[in-house]
Structures are given as C-alpha cells and as structure tokens.
Length: 171
Image (cartoon, rainbow, N blue to C red):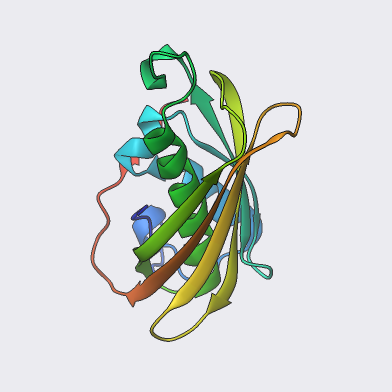
C-alpha cells in the first residue's frame, strides 16, 4: 500500500513536506504528493493531477512503458494493482486528514480491458473513513477514458508520526 503521510508540526520557517501543518488545502496537498513520493511512484512515473480533500478523492497519472509489460505487450496485472492501490491509498490519506498511513487489509481488482503502455489515469476515492477501518476504491482508464480496471479495498487508517520513506520526485 502507498505509504505517504503528512506530519503536523508548527514551524516559524517555511515548512518542508514533513513539517507542513494540517489541514492542507487541495493545492498544498497536490504539491506535497508530487514533491516526494514512495519509490514505486517514482518508478511508475506517478503524478498527482487533482486532489479534493472534502470528497476524499484524487486523480493521478502514470507513465507505463515496456518495462512493465507481460510477453503479450500489455501492462502486467500486478503493476495495474499497484497503481490502483497507490491511488486508493492516497485518497485515504487525503480523507484521513492527519499524519498517518493507509495499510491495506484486502484488495480486489477487476480487469476489464488490457492496459497498454503510455499514460494511464487513476482516480482514487475514500468511500468511508472510520477510526479502525476505511473503504476505498480506484479506477484505471486510458488516455481516451476507457475503463481498464477497478479496485476495491478495505484498509486500516494508521495514525502515526512515523517519518515516511519517501523519495524526491525529479521532474
């Protein structure tokens, strides 16, 4: 599961990613998620395009090339699951609204059409955020809007000040 989170500490100087006080507005969240990412986000060419913290929704893009394909030439199913898991988890982090992580308990992915190399888009949504569990979903589409796969997830919102293992995104 994606392991991004935001830390709440007040600072008189401009805040870094980990030091930015919560709550953040949509633009601040967008900038933070694009500045530092989980290593898989860097590998998959992930970019957060839109954040809606009221709805608990994110829209993202991923750049897929032949490195992520099976012998048939389509994006391997495990990679599709990982992209959708990232989108759902980031939507959960947005909905959590405090420092923490989203730990997947169960995920189910339905593959509806082959994902081809190129730019793919994911929308992640938090359907319900509770104290001990949350329910998430995500959809993957191609550049024409064709639905390729859908994920549903049950997860645990982990409220924590643990520093995440994130990498600077160089764009």
